[in-house]
Length: 119
Image (cartoon, rainbow, N blue to C red; front, side, top):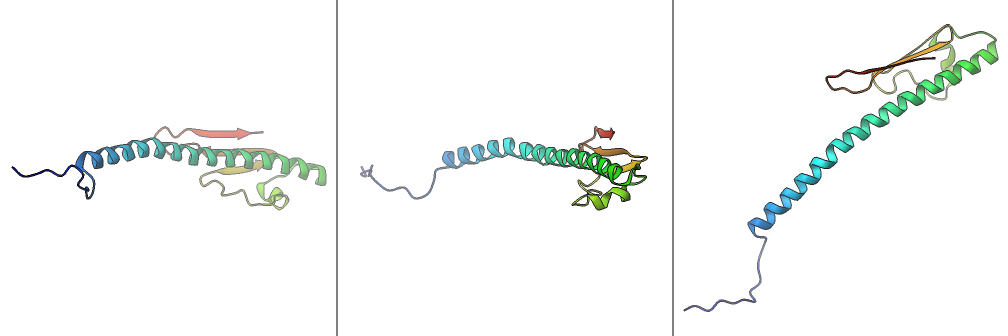
């Protein structure tokens, strides 16, 4: 009968070890990818909200400086340090008689919920 060497060194991994490793990586990716996607959308929503608030502040500054309400978005853009017109993509900002209106599709899924602010 041939002798079996118990202390023999193994080369490589066994199939169950590889299957378990791939399964764990798959589970971790299934958890991480939706969270990353939600974080990206959440950051776009926060940029939209911040831009809306900046426009309200710019309207107030314009009114103090010029003693009149701005009639269009172009009137207050020079007061802003950055251009908010295309940030985030899909956002639409407008000013009519000093009233700021902002529209933005919150999520690109089938629900197409739209956030509309008017101050």
